[in-house]
Length: 339
Image (cartoon, rainbow, N blue to C red; front, side, top):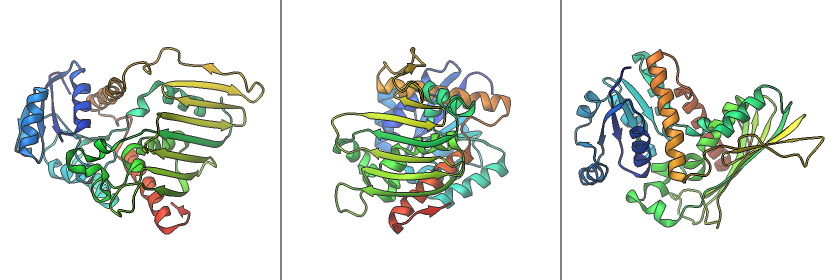
């Protein structure tokens, strides 16, 4: 893949803007177009962001080197299947979809087409998680017994009501905090610990509407490696943000908090070392997301140029979706689910 790349974005929501900022920070990008189902929104979005509007999806695909799908969760694979025959490469925002069978169908067809595809999971490109992965793999932590992960990202009514309110609808978003925000961390856990053996979880919703998404999800994931991970995810109205992963091994324990990593030993529990003093945690949240997205976009471009798999594959997206849906199934059935 040469210089002067053309990007086609499908979707006009908040995260389309994040993607746009990341693409514009890459020197290779020549032009960016946008398509959406609402013509008025397309017109407004393109004027505000100074990009080319498309009302015909086939024209966008024809003019683009990479199609970047950033629409509502339940439309991801519909769009991907729609553009599959003519697209050169496809990038899909997480989750790959809310329907596992539809996502699996797209996966099989894309392999037949020999087309480059990746699913967004930008936290794999954060320094703290990269270093944590290294510590797990090189034996510094020892045998991993326990992992705890806590993510609190408060979201108010304005967030859920935007864009016709699709984020608060189970039928459109697929769920709440687990699938929409924290599938990122489900993917990270797979990256760290491998295949899942079983899951159990439950949701806590803020009202009784059956089509309203959960704001809190708690559970336990047992990995085939023997590691047990306790999860707590929430978008409820806390007065603070929190984001950390703790890993406890036979030799050491490690905490990844925001964009920092801390190592403590069993012999000196008061020894906390900041392994990454110069990280991106001090910049704004929007800039941080765009920085991580830029890293994944660059990885995808490089993978296409070298004809090699990207760091986050289509199968990675399928695996994270499957575990996420099994956690929801566990809540619905009220029992542990074995994968």
